[in-house]
Length: 351
Image (cartoon, rainbow, N blue to C red; front, side, top):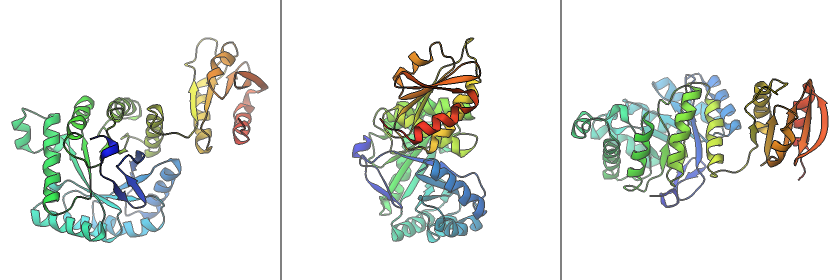
């Protein structure tokens, strides 16, 4: 089932599925019952481009904190629940826009029904999450190990449990740290159900390994027309997840807007600290609402030529640099003024 044909689901004021734009999610790493820290982090993530935020709800204090958090944020909040169905009920009562559960670890059918009934009363979606690391023993044994087929079987089984309780306001998430297994599982499940899919590579790792795994996995899945929301799971600052997710979507042509920064890989001709400069430019342009390409080049030999494909660029020399617009040098400035001059050009941008 391609994303154009998945069921439309409302999460707060956002809509996913049915061909709506793919939305970016992240998860807070603060203690949810620390309302100040959690709100501060969510608002930073929202400003960076996060569309939906998920918070862990490991105890009743966290569940009750959702009410205060909700009043001070502007994006939908998903409550992440494991094991204790009472926490799911409390999260719903305190205003969660969606809850994430694995029916397999919630307990008896009566407990699952209590959660489903509460969600139904408030008409909030349930995200059914299945992780390759927590597959049922009998499914693992039947398939001779952890497989894509087993992940899909487990997920569909959980979906049917909730459907049988009379609810179909669902989002499905199937995750694995094995990239190619995860890709295959998404290909299989997209043929079996029409619910929106939240896509991510779980436990993908640190900034470098996590970005590579997520880029390959999400790229292969999204490029087939599968997936309605995404998260780039990284061991690090959640802000990095948002930056990576936006870039993945833009690279695949699935999201427009935002400045794209390109830079050369440095060489022996480089006369400036290009690595720091490129990172500084990337951070500097994050809040500028233009849909253009900015080039950061390390030398004045090839800089103007290589920057021709960009709308604007800078090229470094010895203690100075060039501002290049549409392939033409428009200004020469001292090195320590390059960033400020570039920002001024962008803030006063005219095609």
